[in-house]
Length: 128
Image (cartoon, rainbow, N blue to C red; front, top):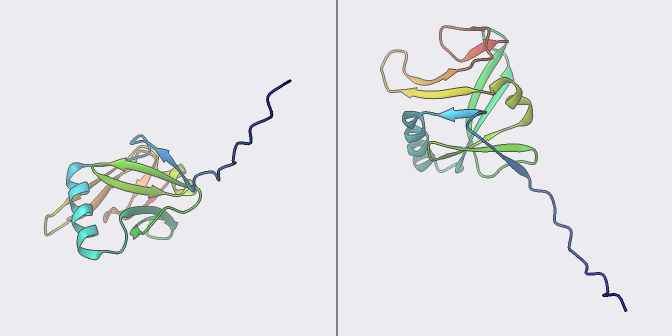
């Protein structure tokens, strides 16, 4: 007599998928600054990087904190920071490095995006 079929519970697909530093990479300086901001702000343990329309060149980088991933997010663990990127942003961000400078003039987060054809002088917007 054959064995009865075993029921395997169906699990929901994860709300996010894991990605690698080939998508986005934070330098050690950027990672340290983000960790300090997470501790100070207390608004979420994840850094969300998004690209939206706007800025001098048509597309702008947006940084913020998130308490948890959203369905469809890509999670990249880099420089000790969990970074969330949505699928649309991933198309423009692939290969990007994020650095941080504490200089008084021209300091802050800096994006080096190999997909950008042009960037503004402030480094907050770009075009493809």
